[in-house]
Length: 343
Image 1: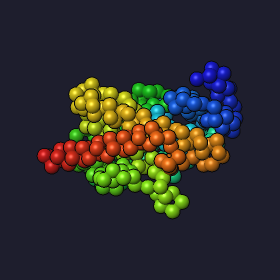
Image 2: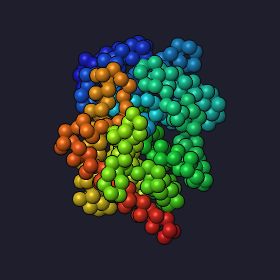
Image 3: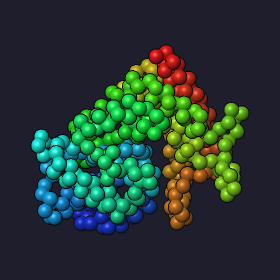
Image 4: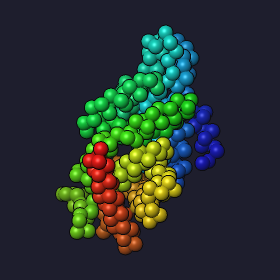
């Protein structure tokens, strides 16, 4: 990462200043991991600006330790060039000061989420942001919330658990973030029904975009012949790996790192791990290329790829990635179905 760019982020006085840096950086950064580092640094600057504004406006300094969490692709360090917000907040609450502490961090959440929006990160349409009380609280509140979802594991609650499982401390006291993540993974490790429900949902309605006969499942009308590699490749691959990692108690949120630990632990063979890692590499490369092509053409980024426009070797790689992901999904479904039925 360019040291000068970091300095400019740290010197920015408003989220609007950061928006200009964001707009320039996404056009020039060519490495996904470097882009993830850029997103982290900008996020933390927005938090710092919000904290400064709170003190100026009479709220005083932060009344307790806190940690902002990245969720979703940000937690996995798999963001694309254009990304919306997925964040959460955990904080301590000294005894007797709960009301004042909650008021402060509710206001901080409002300002940080608004600042990120101003800086070029659109609001999450699913409302997975710290302005939603569901996505902020003390470690104890987080633990009760997670247990509440597990006590009534319908699909909406299982979905919330899966979102909470992919989290990474972004700024603040990382120990608080690790404590919450550890609690989520520990709670889900033996939640057999929730894990089976997620595997079943993926196999029934979220399969890889490849039929049993090896044909592509493509879009309709103006998307005819095109493949949505986010919903048809990335999501089923990441989702399957996540379930195996949770069952193994792996706290690392990154898909690549989860695959490595699954292999080292002996839960996956070297061949299974290689196939999943290669599918992830191909998927991220195709998504990155598509997003960059859209950006350079001044179009909103999307994940629709037309195989007819790809070089032959990339088409072959796409089919291999889809085939590996479909096989992993099937194996995941069968494993967690057996695990649940075994009781």
